[in-house]
Image (cartoon, rainbow, N blue to C red; front, side, top):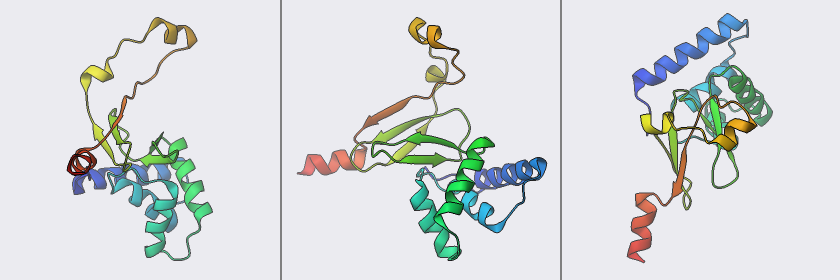
Length: 152
């Protein structure tokens, strides 16, 4: 689901404040890379982000995109997860949420669930270490792919 204009603006404001507070230069490249992740709900991978930003900034390099994404992760401004296709995908929604991933087309959709936020940690996991957050990921066919398969 695509974020609202208000949510995108909140993300951009948080980004700018975080960089200024950290003393990190607010470059046009960093702004555009973050804006691309912040304005989409499709959880793009690095190559997709690069291709989209390159349409607006033809001189940007893939290396700059990767370095910027790693900096944004380190600052807690974006998160990552692995999709079904082995690509790391990026998400500017840093609120506690979960994902549904289509195993056919790769579509990713956020959802919120208090029940999943409060899952009891199994003893075996507690013995390994302390759990900070729980993120649930459902994998299956999205309604569009399911409908296509039903028609065939």
